[in-house]
Amino acid sequence: MANHRTRIVVTLNFLIVTCALTAGAIAQNRRFDELRDDMVTAHIEGEGITNTAVLQAMRAVPRHEFVPSAQRGRAYEDLALPIGHQQTISPPYIVAYMTNELDPQPNDRVLEIGTGSGYQASVLAQIVKDVYTIEIVSELSKQAEKRMQDLGYMNVHCLDGDGFKGWPEHAPFDKIIVTCSPENIPLPLIDQLKDGGRMIIPVGERYQQSFHLLVKENGKLKDERLASTLFVPMTGESEVLRRVQPDPDRPQIVNGSFDLDENEDEKPDGWHYQRQTTMCDDAPMDGKYCLRFENKDSALISQALQGSAINGRTVGTLRLNYWVRCNGIVPGSEITQQAAVVVHFYDNFRREVGTTVLGKWRGSFGWQNARSTVIVPSNAKELIIRIGLNGAQGQLDLDDLQMTAVKR
Image 1 (cartoon, rainbow, N blue to C red):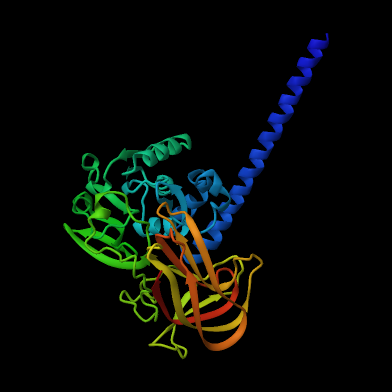
Image 2: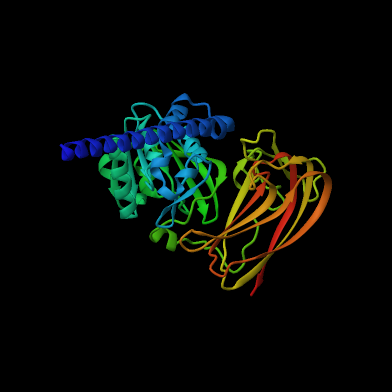
């Protein structure tokens, strides 16, 4: 009798624990659903994406399933996050932007180059008939394939291999999306694009890239240069054989005067992931324009980023010189929500190894010259300079931003 009662108690305790775990998982999933909806509202709709199919797909795909467990708390921030093998998952806005530019249709067959985590392919899978995706890092490819199968995206077909060779046995494709940045457009991809098809691809030097939208008409390509962007260095021969290689011993700011805008999109070239920025001609300190950041909503970010190679073994410090003007700046509730110039350093595994925050401005004042010295970690291999309000509210103007590397 005593053993029977013990079994009943153990069974009840197991059921209680199981119910508690299930309830916790349901509550967490609801929280992720809320965060995902907020992400789409603030960072995708709020940035001008209106395509209903794209918005629905971004709301449907659980981005937290595509990032490492340590990053799940940040899955619905508009950030690139590391996924291992020196690769990242693109920010949600970039995924939505690239998908939107493809103009995906229900009967499309889409080729994706650079599977990564599988997130971009899964978003496309919500809209189109079939997605064929290629990843050169075999382990990433296998992980992504299993993840997408577990989530039920059965119209995604994965291949280990060099994506720049395409997938000829399934060509031609209605659309092609490239989520890694070659120096030039690979010819096999052009050949495998259907006549009337569209391709979006980031092209350029390792740290200076622009999206290009290609439309194939009567066998010829119409090429439209879009926004500046930055994708992490590629894996494979194409990266090693780049004709133009960065100089990590002499990192410099590109277009620090914010005057250059060759594609006339009213965004300064060389600066990527721009949010709520304006090329402002209101009494700039250098050239024709300064860069203005404006934000009235604490849920939004106003920023611009630029990347560079750096060799921390030879560069000991960076000297920054720039002009700043503020109007009614109020910091946000989070410690990171400051009007500032922020320098992030990364090692050769793309792990962050140091961050320096300069400025932390508030209130209002006219043009002031700022000079700062930033210590470079000895294991730094890349840097990202992030300028803007970063969640603070008000108006910030920056101009004539210069950076000089000083040897150790």
